[in-house]
Length: 193
Length: 145
Image 1 (cartoon, rainbow over the protein chains, first blue to last red):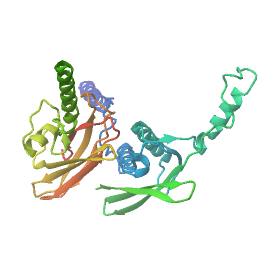
Image 2: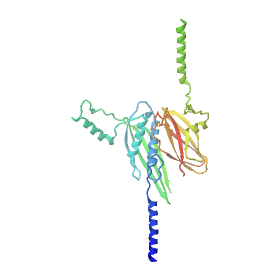
Image 3: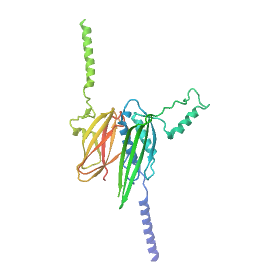
Image 4: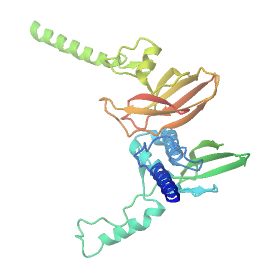
């Protein structure tokens, strides 16, 4: 009798375990990379995409980026003044890609890419290369404008509600005369309750 | 002697007719917005119907006006979205860009979340990403579900 009860109990436990395991089984699916992401209220892909798009479209409306001259720009640092880790290089990379695709501006090598550029130039000056077909040193073109900016945040939390406000600002500076040619901001508010 | 004169007059009239064509407003523009030549747009409602796509259902939210203009060779668009309901609504929108041949001009834009308070109008503004993007569709989607 006791053995029968314990056998039944073991059966119920096994059944429960099986249901539990099947319930916990993870499922992986592809999603929309451009979809609205609201998993947490931390800086996410939607914020990055919105900022890049908003800044690019705004800059394309400036007289500098609307002419036939295709001004040469360089991207400098976007300072992260928020309390969380944000890869600001990902934001500036996206802005650069969008601007480059517009066909209205060109980009010169920025400070972060300079070492690779110099290394390649030096490599081509070596004896391994045909001197007539190698790139010449001293022909690089400097940028006329530099892009820089910063991202700040204000986080408030009370009674189970967390409010995060981000402000991304970007500026376009004339390198020759130091004038600010264009500036814009993008604000984002996310609330979790 | 009359034959060369007649030939000159007919060549000149063809040339003038050819030049005059560019002065007439393009048939593929309605209310300042680009439209396909095969679609008859006789009102703003027709224009909105041709330009706005709703992904799924989106009760109480409607695009009530569209304005287009050219800014430095790029298409600039204002779209007025109205929330007819009393409660605030969360939606997402994006523009789809089309080139002059009807092909997709750029990669899909990101969906942009938007909060519209009850009984209010919100204007969505954008500029085309490049000169290739000569036509557009505005796609809106519910985010409250």
